[in-house]
Image (cartoon, rainbow, N blue to C red; front, side, top):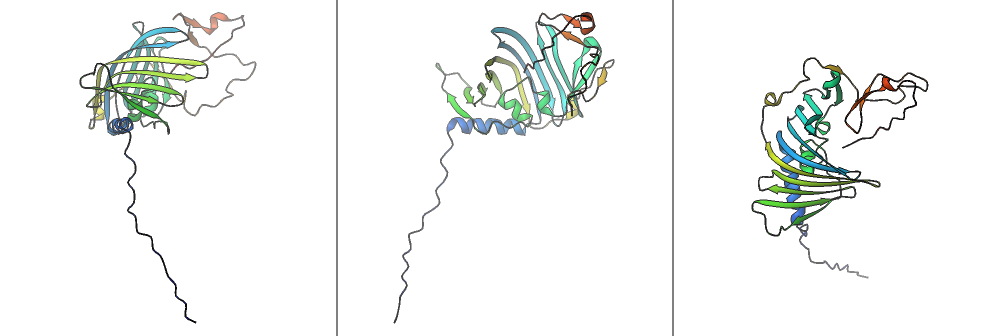
Length: 262
């Protein structure tokens, strides 16, 4: 008996190319790539922030270079509010009124924490959320030389006004923390990034006369104080801007409510 085996071959198909990126996502990825590759940034901005129903004005600047050099300064009501310096080893928060500087962290993400905008965070090495929706918005009337991108994730929405050189012009930022909503609006009076820079041009250091308190926020462990221990000598700033030494409340019951403002 003779048996034959017949094979029927289907025609080969060329591999299909992946679908093209949405124009908004393609523009967002190009923007993030540009800022990720930048070595140095020089930013100045005016801003307003709304939390708990109250709008507050502030302004700030970030002038820094990789790997860890530069300074971040944020002022509110024409008074120094928040100062960070990166000296190449650490980021320190300055408390000039008490003559101290506190170690705040050891990476660029700490230095840029007050600017939670995607391009700035990309420069600091922070990845965007895995799932974001990007929309390219057409302005009416059209804005010359400016593009508008809206980036949405589960926790936040950011709208960026950028020029054709990937410089930030303005931004809106909304973040949700449970029932709390933080809204911020930025106008950039200066925005420059550089693909090459000498870190020495961005050198910063803790000012003379300030005592460095190391490892304040690095490798922190709970349980430093036990029930019944005396509270440390601290001076706290109230919502009214006044300074309150904890010692002044001796003999009274005090409830300390610690909260983080980003």
